[in-house]
Length: 410
View 1 (tube, rainbow, N blue to C red):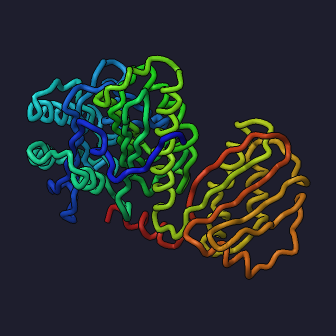
View 2: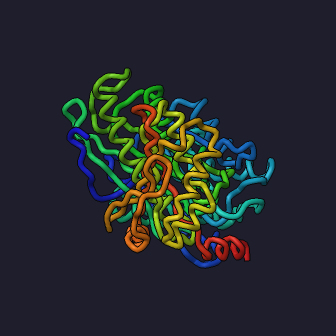
View 3: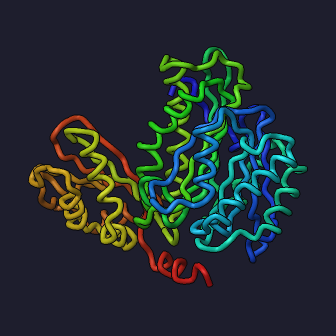
């Protein structure tokens, strides 16, 4: 990517953004459970949301702000309780969260985005939430540490915070895009129980910002799966405050393409971080389908492999059970000739061809197991029909996944 440089930090890396993360008592554990992101000036905002018909109250609130209002200036998020399936009362609590935040920051309630993640069907403990908002606003900071604390505060079953930032030169100016996300379970394409908050100091029109985000989602967050469950709360929000002072991007010119490539790096990094931190998982599982006739065909087949329960279990067992992969390709709904398929496994431990023209090669099981024992494992399927390709990300399926989700509410 031209001029792109990965830099330390997350949501506070871009100019003019502050953040904070605190423990307000929403979680019984006493861990951080509330986060806030604030821009010193109003931003244009873009968003993409869950495709689940059951949409949590914050999703409905944010859709209204993103689609119906010209600006946004703050995001407030709690973890521990999802505020999903909570009816009119739950939506009212979104308004209360936005009103309290707006009052504390001295901004318009219509410019406050809200998010929640955690247990479904439980009303928000508003005393703790209100207390949290009042704790967050005085400690908002532009430091990289503050961004890290916010990233920590949005975690639920995640085992680590997820943040990234890149710098790119656009129109002779230094532009930064930073982001943080959470997600570990109830993760499936078409957005997952994942929240992703992105900030940039780029000057870009609302229309171009939304287009860049919507396009990029297809190749990043919508290509990950942990367990096949599409959540009620999935939200990606992108705020742009124009503080980099580049010439405003209003059309799909060279500056737009540079911005989009940098955004793709950030979203790919965060999407892979979610897949690699799937509940109980021991490995990130990446699947690339190449030689496809159309992009759609490659997407369909790669997603089918990465979501196959039997394949995920085989990856956990470090077992090169290629029959499961060919089977998942076959029921994907995409047409191809199984007698032309080549399949490879690769990782830091090496690369091995498992299938050539639809039948097994004389590969070494021992070598295959060694390759599949790494924390990042990749399968590459070549269907030899054309020049299109797609990559999907998932993880292995372990005993711990069942344990985590059997015990989630208790």
